[in-house]
Length: 455
Image 1 (cartoon, one colour):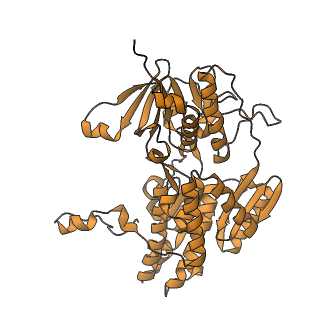
Image 2: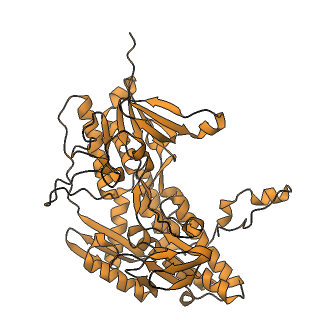
Image 3: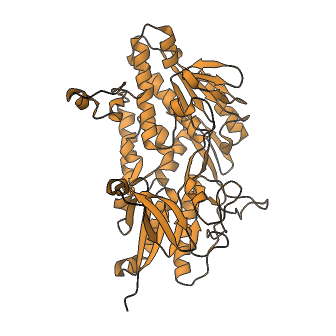
């Protein structure tokens, strides 16, 4: 009788998916070598994105290739499937997958059976029904969006430099960011810093010609770093002539005009949406228990509540915070918890397979760091508050220590060192978004409306 190998299915290739698979590779080395266990990682992208470095990638401080970690190289003992899970029937232990070859083959989705399930699909941008947002808004959650935004900002400066129409120039040099969390504040800080530096190479565009606007619906920004550091951040941004508007919402951006709830109207060609995230839609396509926010109900051991052989962590999971003083509190859906949860999750799967007792996840939140541009930042770590250069330096040191693999750490450190010795690159590669445009035109086809840019 031939014994079938046990299959561990990991849905998602982000923080939790990558680190859990890495942990399992190390702990189950013998079983993987003998073929008794198979680990399958399903991810829509062949890489994991280290999102805290996206603002620096957008500003040109780090190469986009060094913000991502190739799954196939790191997870060399796992089977990596580039695709998405569209439905999961845990009662039957079957996942429905679509891959890049599904449409090419004209076939239906693939059915994949499993023994242990790890759900780590992460989250997606939380959008609101704002008129014009789907047509003109730009997200900031992927490396493609970060590089596209960099190209777009420089391209707007090119447009402003070339036009004689004051209305077009004003709209091109107005940049609206919606959302005062990490993504919005760090992206705005880094890009404003980059654009201010870039302006010195334009004969008719000055830093004071540009309008940078941050829109936040609540009464504070960067709540993770505390109220005092949040107020300092507002003061620092306003000192740089950035218009910070609290208690304000984006009502519309139709016809390239940003209309705010306070009555202000800004003709603009740039609206960056970073107003929160929501659970991945795959969670609703499972038979697993969800809480009122659409996240998986989990135990402190990171297993799905009331279900055997199902595990979750990260943004997709509602994990009880057993270190909190108030009952019912959950761990924050951020990278700090996700990386640590993944290690506990991988260990608990191994303990479960070997019949050993599971370990509860416990980690007290140590604080937060945020970059506001080159040599500028805020931090609230272990009760200590830092700002300016010390906070910026701590931000770099912390994230350099957390980015996966020594290879990536060395490359990022080398790029930072070179960036300190040489000038910034100010090139826009917007034509990357339409790489075949020039050839199609030469071959007699119809060129895109804007083949060289991203607008």
